[in-house]
Image (cartoon, rainbow, N blue to C red; front, side):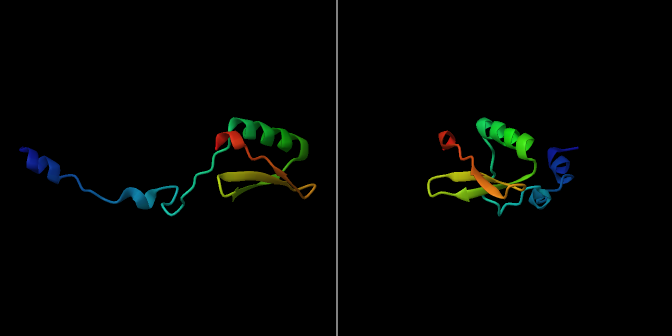
Length: 81
């Protein structure tokens, strides 16, 4: 068996269609360790909440909306920019 025949048995295909995160999403948001601690404290105190990421002009801001009180709490960590 020569090397040319060995390479012919493999097929190349586009595996990007099986990606979990699509290519058109530009940003992958991650919370800093301080934000994770703050979110855990708020969750234990108030319960369910929504995460909101917004663009500030310099970086990405982060705030949560508490379902029970219907208030927004800004948890943007400026040290991570």
